[in-house]
Amino acid sequence: MLTNTARITTPRASTYLQQLCKHFAHKVEVQFDPASGQINFPFGQCDLTAAQDTLTLTVSAQTQAELTKTSRVIASHLERFAFRENPEIAWHPHAAA
Figure (cartoon, rainbow, N blue to C red):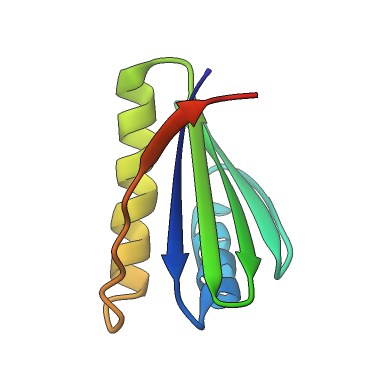
């Protein structure tokens, strides 16, 4: 399993977490509350956590192509939802546990 993580500093961390999850719930399996969430795509998964002013996104997938796709889908939607803040989304790869 390949994994990327991005941490975004924003006072709206919980709002964006819930907005992302609600958006994708119309298409794929999603579980969430104000502090955490999980979005399960056919090509990968995104785990989200909101703590104070930080939104943490962790995407995972079986292949590099799927990981890239999952990262792009999540980032592009967050950029649209948070356009007023213009968040910097920098993905950092790491080995999954």
